[in-house]
Image 1 (cartoon, rainbow, N blue to C red):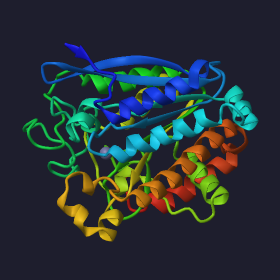
Image 2 (image 1 turned 180 degrees about the vertical axis):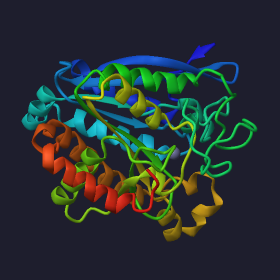
Image 3 (image 1 turned 60 degrees about the vertical axis):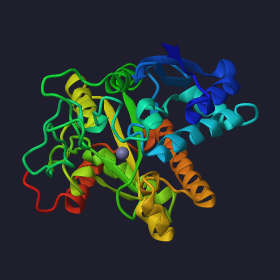
Length: 346
Ligand SMILES: [Zn+2]
């Protein structure tokens, strides 16, 4: 078996360069290894920096869960690169790192990235593989299926353990985020629709989550801080329901363990159809449906979303000042129900 840390996978090599540049400011660990074929093993890394004190908030950035959506991994790598490049001079960044823990897992599914597939090398869609069943309105196939690993959106065999990559992600979230009173996770994807969307749970049911007021308050904070942002902020269930969503699973687990804590999982869904619309030839390549293929467009995509990830880190740092309490919380709840859940049976 040859262990690859890799020039073979460009994103892994890039991660290694960034980590070396960050030196003693970062901690890197291999949280699992995945086999691709008979003779290749790829590591899944978690990188941490900032203050480890569990009394402080934490933010986790995740990418590459779907191997085909390379731009998701690249956005998280670009965010980490920006942090590392500023370590030598940015005194405000160091103040922030005194008050915050940052976690990066940019390449959750390196085997899928290597093979250019949405699923992991066993054909399992990591975002359909968690032990959560959607209600019966989940769409056929897209919502997750157990018919065959040869078809997309495969949930894995009934009763089988969660895929190693998904387990590794859950462990990192459990150890680094759920140990805190306040944490946010951002998982970067692409491939859905014309608009950039920020999704929050649930994916398995149209019902609202217990932290709906906090999600609505975070959305209001974004609207005020970045007046002209173009993100559509909404529960995933407004678009479609799905089985096995990892973030539903982790959110449910977090809420069951510590209902007094706040864990806000967000999924960035970059609207790739716009890239295709502007460059229809992309339609004829598999990667083109999920990634911007023209360099200036890719740079614009990275710029925009790295700015949003920075906003999330700032919001986490200052959470005590904006998390709604008492009557304000009830008001956010009412506004959120009117905006996102009108007509939903609860
Ligand atoms: Zn995805």
